[in-house]
Image 1: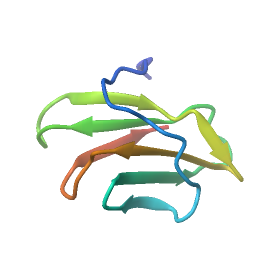
Image 2: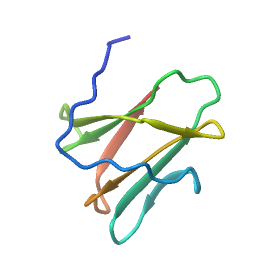
Image 3: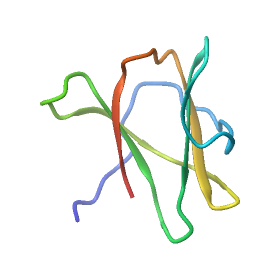
Image 4: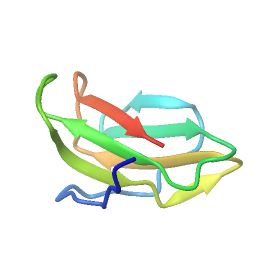
Length: 84
């Protein structure tokens, strides 16, 4: 496994553990991912499907085994993935 490091210019907020998944709001996107055994979780944002990630966001908050964050300014259609 490759070691990732937090690398983004985006503002990242605590967000909410509920609901699970990626939840679009008028302000941005809340991400919530359940993992009882994960020791770290990264959100990877992509500018295009076949490209490298443009942002690596390390989740800093976990509630009830749900890792969560909110990224203001993201819109519908944002390509993303997780590394757990």
